[in-house]
Image (cartoon, rainbow over all chains, first blue to last red; front, side, top):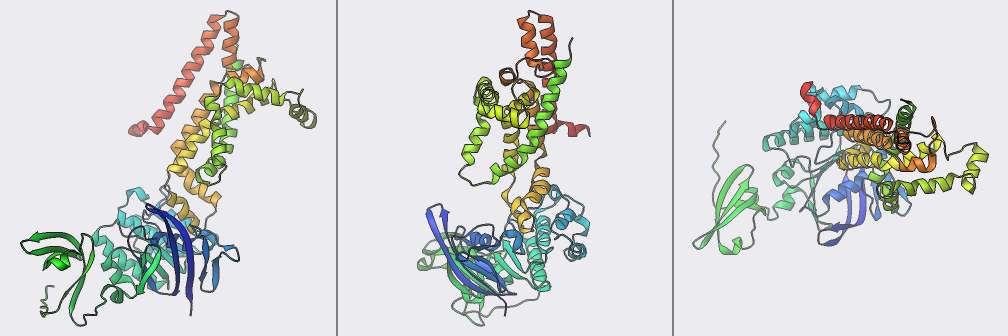
Amino acid sequence: MEVINFSLEKKLSAPGGVMPLEVECTLKAGELITLYGESGAGKTSILRMLAGLMKPDTGRIEVSGEVWYDREKNIFFRPQDRGIGYVFQDYALFPNMTVRKNLEYALVRGQNKSIVEELIEISALGDLQHRKPETLSGGQKQRVALTRALVRKPKLLLLDEPLSAIDHQMRLRLQDYILKVHEQYHLTTILVSHDVSEIFKMSDEILFIKNGKIFQRGTPLELFSKKHLRGKFQFIGEVIEISKEDVVYLISILVGNQLIKVVVDKEIAKDLRPYDKVLVASKAFNPMIQKIG
Amino acid sequence: MDWSPIILTFKLATITTIILLVLSIPLSFWLASTKSRWKPVIETLVSMPLVLPPTVIGFYLLVAFSPSYAFGSFLEKILGFRLVFSFEGIVLGSIIYSMPFMIHPIQSGIRNLPQSLSEASFVLGKSRWTTLFRVLLPNIKPSLVTGIVLAFAHTIGEFGVILMIGGNIPHETRVASIAIYDQVEALNYANANKYSLFLFVVSFLILLAVFLVNGGYLRKWK
């Protein structure tokens, strides 16, 4: 079976001094893997080293039997030679080219142009193809950037927080688009994301990166709901606000795009801070389901 | 009025600007992207003409290219090239003297582009040259225009370097700025005024054009 195998070490300069990054991992080809963790944990650096945009201090990268980097044997493939797709957080579309020219720029010399037509079709970029990037919305730009990354038919698609600057509705549609092309082109996709609901929806597996190490690894369910409240009713949410009301605390939690308020006691409240990810579960009640549309 | 100093000035400025453009694009790209420890040294050398008196540059070029010394006599004997008191010599002097005016705008233009643009191009399999010519340069047109115009205008305004290595030879090194000095020395104020006024007007128009183009004023009339 095809695998991606890497061990990477690099001393990263972080705000609080030097942070050593040390990760070692084997991934199954064809999966969608998410790198999850706080900002500054080293997720983007891992992605950049896989792409060849950053040189590790030492280590080895092997993708489907091909060695891209081996410190000991002095092998280093340039980004140009790795055959990857990479999507940047800031889209990185070329402002001087139209949408179509951006896609055509990516063609390998002698490559059949039909792939560009095919991708414009799949990504529904037909109406936008003659426009310059500056006239597009954030979501449209990212759709172009994702599409451009596919022109060279990469085996490995690296996405660096591609949806973080995009509004909720558009984000859901782009998530579907990523899943669709991931299946259709048999990609191995590595996604950097902060958004737990996004991770649940998309990932086969999560690598939880903490202080430059792989802290935990598993499926979304294994990682975010360790207690396995099977058959019960649970959501992942984000703490928005903690307020004290007499003897109890009222926690506002954002689940999806809904705000819910939960009463908790002091013991639980003292560990929570705004932006914490929490699991909201209910054991005592039977959930009621009502059809609304 | 003898027009030859004016014509010579524009010939010098045009040739200097073209050569500088060709040299400066790769050098600016290198300066904008390198992590080499030589970078500060090269940057300093490029910027030296901004602070040094032109006579200092002129003096060292004069010494270096004089046939009485090793390098100059090597050039003359082997290549048949004399750089002192010749047009080729003042072209070389002008290239060195105007270099920061071309390099700085291009370098800062490239540096101000997001790094992800070149990285995206590399990941799409494109070489550094392709990236430079198809992605970076087309997106820094205002910087290129600024560099070209400043280098051209600055060469027109050159005096010290030319006087030191070129002297005052009609049709060869007597550019407009030298001709003005020459006319004043001969107490020929009317002629000096004609040359001066000409340079004043031309410089004004060139700089005005840059500010109009880069300030976006021309778009209003499109």
